Image 1 (cartoon, rainbow, N blue to C red):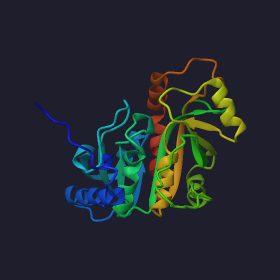
Image 2 (tube, rainbow, N blue to C red):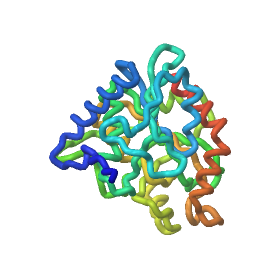
Image 3 (cartoon, one colour):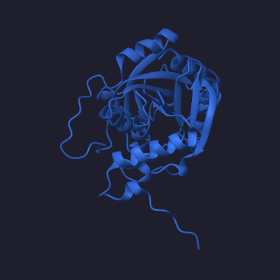
Length: 277
C-alpha cells in the first residue's frame, strides 16, 4: 500500500527558511545551475511565456524538490524550470503554485518564493489570472499590479516580524515594464481567500476600498518576497470582469479560455519584460 510522504512544511516546529534552503540546494543539484537571478510564478494564462524566455536547462517535477507538491488547479504546470536567458542570466520558472484556499497553510503558499530567494533570485515576478473591476478592461488585458489589499486574514510573517511594504510592487520595475509596453495599465490587486468567486457585494466592497483587480493568489507571496529582500513585479491577466461588473455568470472554464486566447500576446510581453529587468 502506497504511503503519502509528509511535507516538511507541515511540521510547525520546522524552520521554513531552512526547508527553503534545502529546496534551493536540491534545485542546484538537479539543474546544475548555482544561482538563479530572477524567478517567475506563472499563473493562469501565463505558462507559455516560459518557452520564449530562453534555453531550458532543466525541467524538474516539483515533487522532487523538498516542500513542494503537485498543483491542485487545472492550468498550472507542476514543475520548476531553469532557463538561461539571452544575456547569460538564469530564470527560475515556478509552475507549481499552492493556493491559500487549498488549506495547506501559508508556509506552503510562499515556499516557492522563499526557495527562489534561497536560490539567489533578487527579482520575483508574480503573475495571475484575475477578475477586473474597471469595466473598460476586456478579457485578455494584461495589467500591472501597483499595490494590494490582503483580505485573507493571514500573513506569511511569523512572530514579531515587521516588514515595510510601502513599495512592495516595485515602481522601478513597473517603469521598466512600461518601457516595453507603454499602454500597460495598472491597478490594486485584492486577494480573497477563495475558492469561491466573489459576490457582487464583495466586489463593490473591494472597489470602495480602492481595489481594481480581484483574485485568489499573489498578495501572500509578494509579502514573503519582500521579507526575503526581493524586488517584486506583479502582473494580472484580466480573464473576466468581476461579479456584478460582468453581466454573465463566472466560471473557471471562462478563466482558462481567456488565458488560452491571450497566451501568444501576454507570453511575448512577459518575455520582453524579463529581458529588460
